[in-house]
Structure formats: C-alpha cells, structure tokens
Length: 172
Image 1 (cartoon, rainbow, N blue to C red):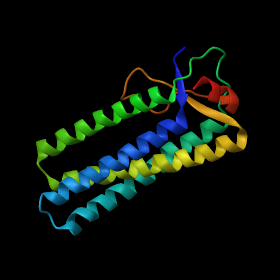
Image 2 (cartoon, one colour):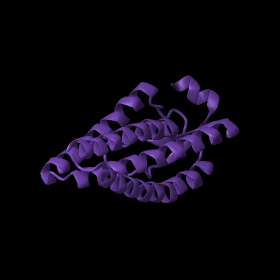
Image 3 (spheres, helix red, strand yellow):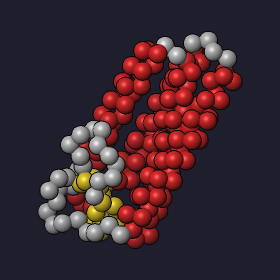
C-alpha cells in the first residue's frame, strides 16, 4: 500500500504556495507597466471564478469523503510532516515553472494577471478547506489522510483514510 499523508497539511501548504504564486503573477503583470486597474480586474475575476469552482467542487468532495473515510489499514506508512512539505512544495514549483513558461511564451501581462488570479483563488479555496478539515479533525479526534501519489500532477481525488489523533500524531 502507498504512503498516506495529512490532507489538512497538504491543503495548507499548497494553499499558501498558490496564493504566493498568484501574487507573483499579479506582480509580474504590474511591473510590466500595465495600469494597475487593468491588472487587478483579471486577477479578481480569475481568482473569484477559480476559487468558487475549487471550493464548490473540490471542497465538496473533501467534505463528503472525509466524513465517511474508513480507518487506515494497519501498518500503512504515514508520511512525515517534513516529507509532506517537500513533496507538496515540489508540486507547486512545477506549477510555477509551467506558469512562468506560459507567461514568457505569451509575453502577456494580462495572461500573467489571469493566471495569478486563478492560482490565488485556488489557493484561498485550499486554505478554506484546510481550516474546515482542521475543525472537523478536532471535533472527531481523527486525522484525515490521503494516499500519496507517485506523480506530482495526480488528481487530488485519491483515497482518504482516518487515524485516531493519537495514532497519527505518534506516526509523524
């Protein structure tokens, strides 16, 4: 069986990283000399649209599936918090490189602003989901863990499991 990792930690790390990437995208558009209003409008529109989609679809999936997640099979390896941090940040760096390549390929400040808004919106939705998940974990005294993928671009809809808080704390 594959390793499992804290879903709340993954969401928290990716949320902060995506918001930071979004700010970088908006900053790249602003330093190119475009009027700030012409940058902020696509950032806000892209951010709100992507954030709502992520919250309504991805957040709903997390809320529905985490509440009914089965207990983790015995002897399933639990990834350490540092390994989760490294793995999640690597994914964000790869996303950043793709966005950077698209920006330079298009040389479009407007495109950088839209991508920045989309990334920031998804990041905010991840942070909201992480907060909800943390509240739920405290209320149920169980940690929600997600199967770790071998690919940094794998879907987030991987199997979820739970461990009693004391077991997951001891494993990390």
